[in-house]
Length: 102
Image (cartoon, rainbow, N blue to C red; front, side, top):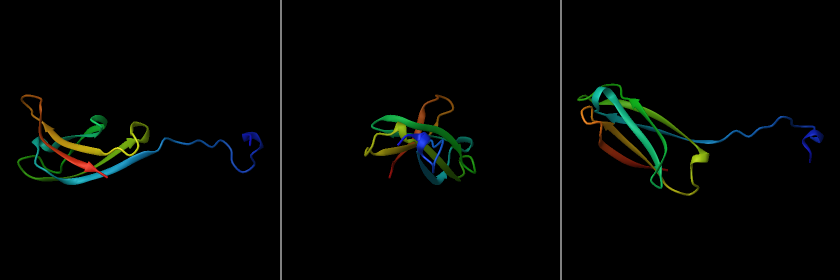
């Protein structure tokens, strides 16, 4: 059916869908800042940083929403999220935790 002959709908567009995860927990990291990377098959599909409610050495709570465009994902392949901090002296990743995303 041609669009111009369609009487019930017009100018319909399909937006790219996304997958959203919420990661919560406690962190004891320098100035409360942590990094995250979501990986699939070893490839980073989303990354960023967040801030816990308190900086180390205290434990602060955090809630991190992570949105991944579906176009970056391979169907039926597992995802992992890596939480870590960056060493202020060396700039290297430290204290990495890897968790599966379902």
